[in-house]
Image (cartoon, rainbow, N blue to C red; front, side, top):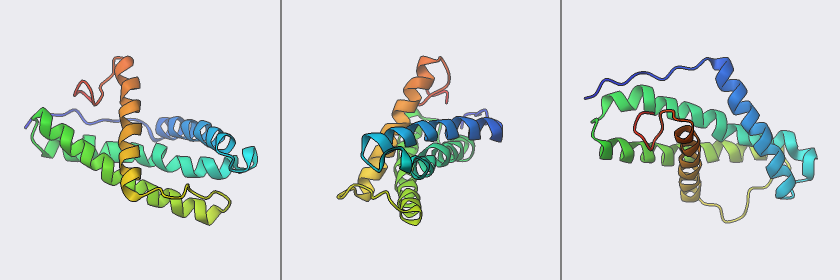
Length: 145
């Protein structure tokens, strides 16, 4: 097994970055999908905080706990990571749905299924890792992050 460097970031930096992303996504979603316009921005932001903040912790769990305990073979790393993203996406979608229901007003699209949530979270992570790759940082694509 390879020696992996643990990923570390201050809680403040994590909260600021993921909170800012959730604010932007909340504004876009509340406006673009007709969820009551900007009056629903706080609710949409709270819902968007699940994949931003929660997704960060899913990724940290993989990087710092799972990755060091599995084979360093690239195929194993990729398959396990994608599997974790899928299951994590399903769990985050449950949290998003419960938050939307508790805060009221936002109704998730009809027909969204658990597997769509898993696949959607994989897509979000792949896009996020494109940005990391473009900045020359460790990412899913280069195997360093």
